[in-house]
Structures are given as structure tokens and as C-alpha cells.
Length: 257
Image (cartoon, rainbow, N blue to C red; front, side):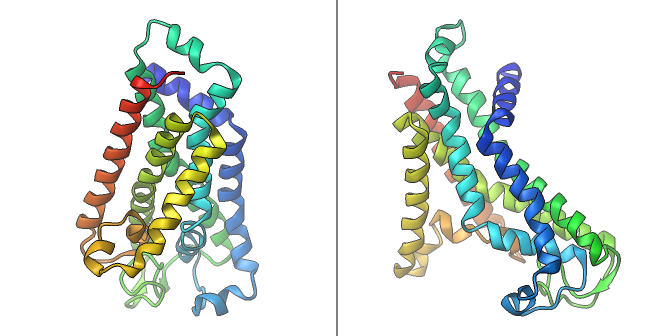
């Protein structure tokens, strides 16, 4: 299984969509320190480089990151179908379940890869503002950007690390859903569009009562910045991830490719 996952990871890094997404995540944060209207839009004055990861996540997490994940994870199936490499792979003495599980593992790691690139780029860009102690908040801890008083570099790092892990976990269901649609449609464009359509439709369900909204995947795409108890949201996102992942495995085992 580790060998298959390693092979799929190398395939992932060879995809143009994955490389482009990683490049955007790494370089886009360098815009923030020099964006004159950013302070007005955020209604906060950036005083530390530790605040840039929260800015980057806030800007990218609602659309660009799901888009990158949907396209690349759908391509893990769609590209192999279009190139004719999936059928020969299934002729080898490797079970279908192992093949799709290897793809699923890599797909679920992809959000963490994007978030890591985004945070690294943000902290590198934040060197202009400094990464030492400051008065305020990282945007990922108590008080958000206003903070609750002086914050040391170590405390800021812990807040950024916590937010980054939560961001990676909350995007895992998107990756599993895209892989599921990839199996169902065997086409990158159709699977990516279906994933984005589902996310947008779920966002439109804000008209339903709060009890229903709490069960929606899109209601928890701000988990990375939440304070207090995040366990309920985390469990729900993991249930979505497991559900979409198991459906992808089941569908692939029975799909005629």
C-alpha cells in the first residue's frame, strides 16, 4: 500500500494542475504586505508577519483552495482514463481496492500540501513585517486579529500551526468528494464541476434552519479560525471524509473502466 501511495504521490506532483496550485499558494501571499487596500478590506492593520497565514487562508479557502483540490483530485482518475493508463494498471496483480485506496490517501494529503505551501509562503512574505513578539492576534487565535494583548513568537507559531492543521482537515472532504466524482464520471472536467456545484449548492442552503445548517459541509469551512470547542465540527468533517472516501472505493470496485 505504501508503494502504491508513493507512486500516486509522484503522479500527483507531476500534474500541471498540482504544480500550478502549489506555486500560487506559495507566491500569492507576497502580495499582501504591498496591497494598499488590504487593510481597508480586512478592517485591521497588519502589524506582524504572523498574521499573514490567516489572511491567506481567509482569501483562498472559500473558492481557490476548493477549486485547486477539486481539479487535481478529479484529475487523479480522469487523467489516467484519458491517457489510457488506468485499464493497464488494473490488469496488474493489484486489487482494485488497493489502487483506489492509494489514490484516496494521496488525495486526502493534498489539502495539507497546499496549506503547507500557503503558510510557508505567508511566513516568508511576513518577514517584511517581522516574526517576533507583537501586540495583537494572528487571526487564528483568541481575539482574532485584535488579540488579547502581547503575543510572543512561540505563541503565534502555535496558533498558526493549529489553524493550518484544522484548515487541512476541513478541506479533506472536498478532496474525497472530487475523487468520488472522478470515479463516477471518469472525466476531470465533469468531476471538478460536479464537486464545485455541490459546494455551491450547499452554500445556498443557508435558508434552512440553523439545526440543518450545522450538518452542512460548507458550514464548517471556517473551522481553521474558530475558537473554543471545534470537536463537533471536526468529527462531522471526518465523517464526511470517511463517507465520500468509502463511496469512492465502493464505486471504483464496481466501475467498468
